[in-house]
Length: 285
Image (cartoon, rainbow, N blue to C red):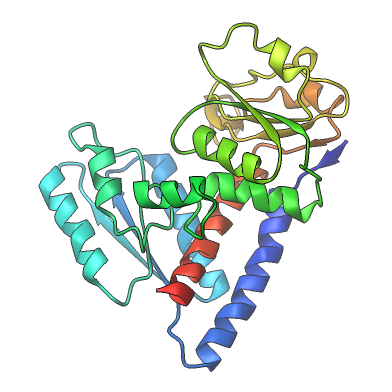
């Protein structure tokens, strides 16, 4: 079994991004600038946005975080998004999810200019992705692809099962694996006899959001297992919680040829994908 180490790969890609940023600035091109909107005081969201700020600093990007109280109205938030759309100094914008229940997430993400949509959620970018045309790819699926490429994992002709059909991961992940010449099956919560699909898969991408869902008996020997899931579970450690993926890592890792850990697998790759998209925005807009 070989670990697909997202921490290690993301560090290497960040060095490459920093080098490219230095070259852009030497040519008189502007420094990439990523903005993030954070609403409320969700602990996980605050931690994630702080990590993005740190990433930007490491690669030489400018970054701006706009923090708003949970009481902000939908109209006020839409106005803030439009301000950033019009700001030529900002190249990429992310709105940290989840948002408070009184705000329509779909309306907010679709209001972000598709030219600054570095999360890859806008319908225009999604359409371009499905057509295989240049666009901002959804960050998590993009990160998974970069991880597979780094480890020179051959995807051509492989049977790939994606567990999960969300707009953020499952659906775009299946499209990108199809573009990588896989034969793709999408499974989900209504799939009957899940194991009959996963046991035949050369590559399994688990994004179902259920801790330890994928068991060792559900995969074949030598499968490649990508764990996108991450759930915070309370425990008695110093932090008071631990992070668990969708894959029963301890047992599945004994059968898998390659596997991602949680944490330290797909998470860092998602963050570096945002940086790659922001860099692309500077170069193309």
